[in-house]
Amino acid sequence: MIQFLLNQRLVSEQDLDPNTTILNYLRQNQRRCGTKEGCASGDCGACTVTLGHVDQGKMRYQTVNSCLTFVSHLQGKQLISVEDLRQPEGLHGVQQAMVDCHASQCGFCTPGFVMSIFTLQKNGGGHHQQIEQALAGNLCRCTGYRPIVDAARQACALAQQDSFDRQEAATVAQLLTLQTPEMQEINHRGNRCLLPKTVKQLSDALLAHPQAKLLAGGTDLALQVTQRGEALPLLIALDQIDELKHCTLSDDEMVLGAGTSLSNCWQWLEEGIPALTQILARFASQQIRNLGTLGGNIGNASPIGDMPPMLLALDASLILQQGDSQRRLPLDDFFLSYRKTALREGEFIRAVVIPRAMIAQHFRAWKVSKRREDDISAVFAAFTLATDDAGCISSVRIAFGGMAETPRRAHHCEQQLLGQMLTTTTVESACRALEQDFQPLSDFRASAAYRLQLAKNLLRRYHATLSGELTVTEVSDYVL
Image (cartoon, rainbow, N blue to C red; front, top):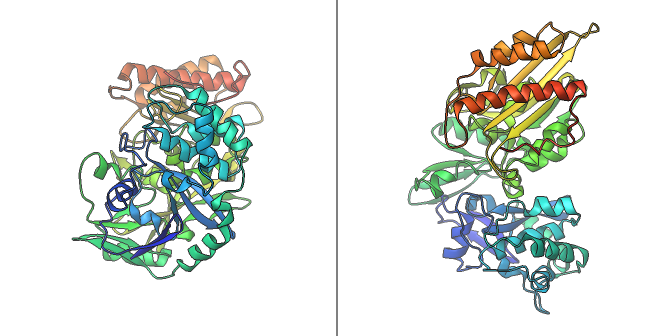
């Protein structure tokens, strides 16, 4: 059984298919049709809802794509849909701002925009960059973003106490009563989802059910249900395991829990690795980053994932756990072939470790895609480099996504650079070596020849950046 608050109403669900998305649950089970389905793939934001959870005695809110979020994610949280914004005195301030600024056109996308602005307002945001990030995952097919942005500015600038503020203490108290240390389960007609609360419960459950699918954020896994029409008979949800979200920093290394959301990675790494967090600004949308996890982005072994190339360049390793045993594996050895990894039966990613020595080196990363926001890479490149006292390259790591069946380092290219001065001649030799490292495929994002040329040009760009010939203030400005 799972329990959560639908606005302020306690809901308990036992006989519920764990393949049900929050979108379908709202529309079919609760008859709340304000939340719309636009794409069922997390691209348009029409289905955006708000989830609230308790953080240090206060309510914290996040937007999620309800079309990609399974109902198991609701355990112990507050679910707020557009219907809940109605206030005793009338419209919520966000809704009134949408009216005042004439920000609704056909209206289909409007509920998603309203929920994104509402969440931004509740979290105290409102400056231009925050508004852009909050709305980047919401698509208006009629165009007209100017009045929507104006509505966001007005709603945040004129925020007043609402029913959620007045009921916060009661909401916190009620959500705290829903926390339980026991592993929970929901099932319906043979489809099951286990909700462990500790790493021990997870490791035991996965040993007992090695065929189970691990459900972290689910932003990729859910597509099997929403796009392919498949059923996932046995899931083990990781969202309730706080141990997987712990991040620590020592003199030698940075350890990031595999369950850390990409939004939290952004906050955690912002000062230490600013080039990485700049890339995260282009990682899908805020709704996706709120759900998607670091471990999930690695574990799905996509050849076009954004985090693996950066982590390869940073010489990251993984802490893997099977039962009570742990092992440490270099990320270099994790990806075996397309969507295949070195994970053993019953094993899972517990944490990602980044050596602090790598953070101090010249790390840069660039993502090339057809759109600046919310798009998948055609080519992703990440570079680190260090030189000795004589100015020769003493260490170098170069990794790419979108160039092979897995995220992969460019070993021939690295060898051409190692021990050399970083000059135009050296870089051109390294560019030619990329032809030995990669034979990319052609697809609808880019041709093989274009991908290879992009990889070479990004290496040239790295050289130009380090030499001072090119000054780049943002890494998010590179699109096809």
